[in-house]
Image 1: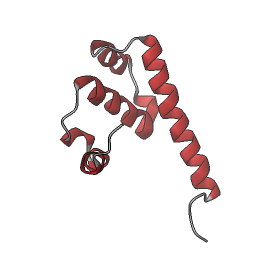
Image 2: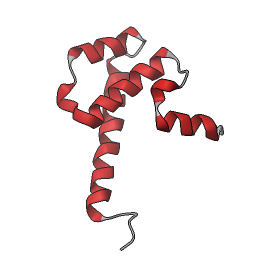
Image 3: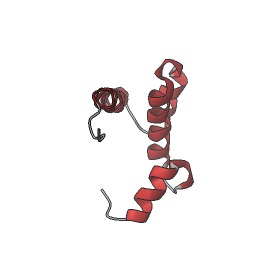
Length: 85
């Protein structure tokens, strides 16, 4: 958690341009790929996650959380949640 609004804005704009620990950067790259096209996730992604310290349980947790957010956002979008009119 951070109260640094500038950091949050920079992270939202492009996480690659923000100085992050390797573990965070690799995790975000994995989550980005899940969001864009999960069918392109290969064992190499999991190996990169392991190389920065995630175990199978951590990889599963990242995958489940990212997938759930993707799912619930699509449901909300389809139902017009948060849109006017």
